[in-house]
Length: 304
Image (cartoon, rainbow, N blue to C red; front, side, top):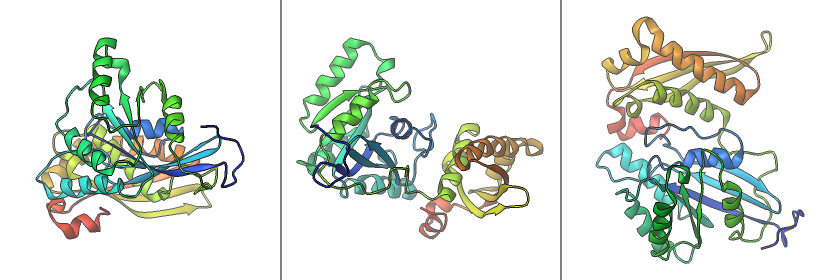
């Protein structure tokens, strides 16, 4: 398909694409790579993404609005079921599905849910990005491609590495070829529809994931209680609360003499300053919201 640089409805193509995949397949890393800016948090731990975040990619003659969704997996927990529903429902609202699969993991159990859902959506175009090919030998990669092609649900299969950027431009070109004609949905300088407060909260949560273990990352939520400019000091003042489910978790997040909380805050502040382009004063609090992930009211209260 030949795209011109004009933005008239006849020769411009635009649409929405759902990014989906198993936990830790690299969805958020790929979204950040395509946009060229960090808008979606990443972590080696699965189930980092909880909300549906729109990232906007601008190309010559096309615009793709990506919905970065939580990883799809089977779970009996109320909160996990809720975020999986968010991921699956995104496929009902888009022009194109982009599934990310980990080429280094031949058979993740959760992918059957996605395969079934994508099959149900035919003839909606679906593109498969086989990620982490830099970690896989060529014979195994060819075997993986054949396995996925045999399902007959993908319009195209593109091997990539979201981490190194290998074949990411080719992936975007493949997706652009399946977009319907139409004007752009967002101006050229827009990168996401997520408000700054949301991205700031996610950046703080990313540092909690990075520095805590076991159940702590999955028992935390972050809310922004104050977000205001300080013209006299030429900075932004942010007060944020890290919510945990038990007193013991609060102690771990704060750490010995507050060291853990200080580390989380210091690293988050650097990312937030890069995002906002100004100095930031970040103050963190840790609060106990007992068993919040098991209570529908608390889940809604904390933004999910």
